[in-house]
Image: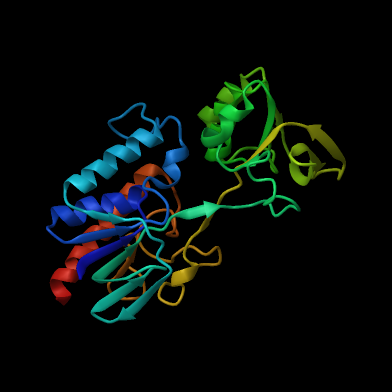
Length: 303
């Protein structure tokens, strides 16, 4: 029996572990794959207080070591269900069942797909959702990034230093991402920005050879020959397994206030899977601190 189980080991979950351990609570962190979450894919974090430049990998390692050093226990199993028994909650994985007095959901989100024919088959064969993971395979080649948020802009910037040519394809006429990154991209000689367009087809044999791009204004299509397509069109919150206990909005995000409470007493939510106006590293860590503080308060008062 743990005081608090945290589902997810991204910045929100690991920050929650730090705060819960500093309150002398026993803490188990369950994570399906590896610690770090989405921030692992960021090559250079420039907007987090204290560190002007730090990689997502280095940041994640530092937070993980801090949480471990304080005594948080990490188990790499995927939580698939939470059984609410009032004062006790059981978190179920394919291998085990773990019990706690309170649970924090910090499950984050997964990559949103374009939904094109052959997309799944071509992952690793020209289609990728992680520029920092796979970009080096496309050194001196031609690639495209699809998306208009910060991830897409950061991916295009990163790839512009590796690839011979980078196309950035966005469905609108302006970007949702930071103006600073957009300005940097426009100065890159090897970057071509295509506005008001969608990627509507993947042309491939064993590997991706080209993409079909459709102009949203006049409906015309063109084919662009390339070696790699990096998809950065947003994320899908990983809340569906817990929908019976957590109210979700139309987009699948957990409906919760800044106090990180859910409709189930003793169940809290933190990070990118929570409905909020801004999803950044700093807001994820803030959520983790708040959720842990509220969970500690709940454990102290209810038990």
